[in-house]
Length: 336
Image (tube, rainbow, N blue to C red; front, side, top):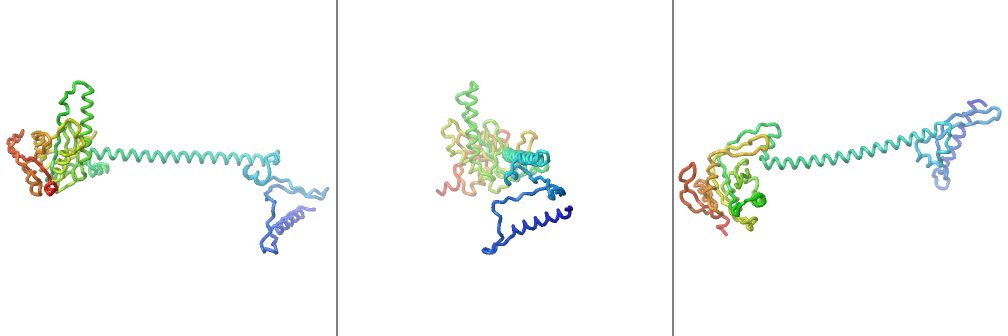
């Protein structure tokens, strides 16, 4: 038998097997499916043995991994020990294991990267909040974009100064007393911060026992005097620190100022001008639990319904005699 005849026998055998597999069931009209038989792909070479008048097929199953080997009912010992079948299966299994390990590492790196991005985003938000607490948001955004922070002139704002008094009345002769004083001051200033309503009033800074705020800058506000007086009335009536043995006094003045960011390390938004100095003098010459207004600020708020009382002329450092007023209540309180 020649090799051509052998090939014809193999082909005819394959065709017969295919015809059996594709045999149609006359009862259902569907192709019959062989039960219990498992397909296997073999690769090798056929030889015709003339002496025996027979064909011999030297082959090995094509297996990619151990799972496929077990799926067709074979074991590793069933493979030819002298061929490459075992090596191919083991190599495929090892390659698959390496891929799984690489995939797990990439998943781990992805999780770590995601956590790092979340942490970086959290740090950025904290940094932004800290920056905005020192510098107004619009100015901070311009500086972040590389623009120079220019000074800005405001035609009219209202500046508020609040001084916390009686912090050291009991004496601060040691570190413990000083720490208690700082703790008390922190509670008071934190209570002041809660009364700030943005963007109508902006907290500028705290220096020692003095708390400074402004209305009308950096956001222009035509009702700056009213909002400044409303804040002062809320601070006087606040119950957040009623149990603390201290008192506060407040001074307010309105007028033009120049504002800008000063410094590179720990930059601050600062106000400059005679309006600021006069507001500071209104506070320093005020009395405990009272709000002293300059003549100009008193005229503005009286015109919209705020109740004031003439204090008279007060000697102000660098200004001489100035006519000032006490702020008693707002227009809403008068209606009540």
